[in-house]
Image 1: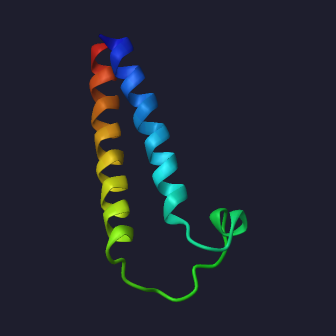
Image 2: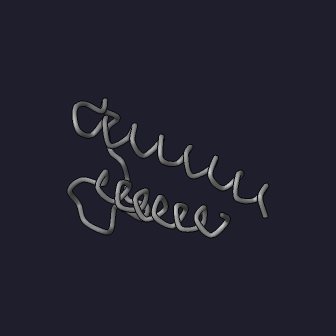
Image 3: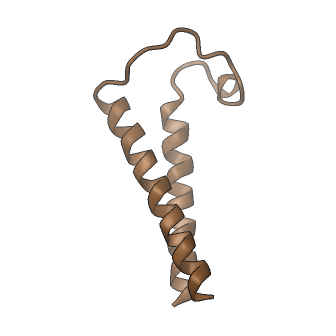
Length: 72
């Protein structure tokens, strides 16, 4: 059972990484690791959905991690 939770954790972690990289628009790898954000703006449409899915997956990852630790 614990192995299944670890596999789910790996899949969720990869999905979170992909979603975070999809949210970085435009300026290439330089801005991913600390480039200035510029002007604050609101998220709309697909960008807002990506953000909400990323937050949801992060919470789900946290819950799965707590369950896996409690079972071990």
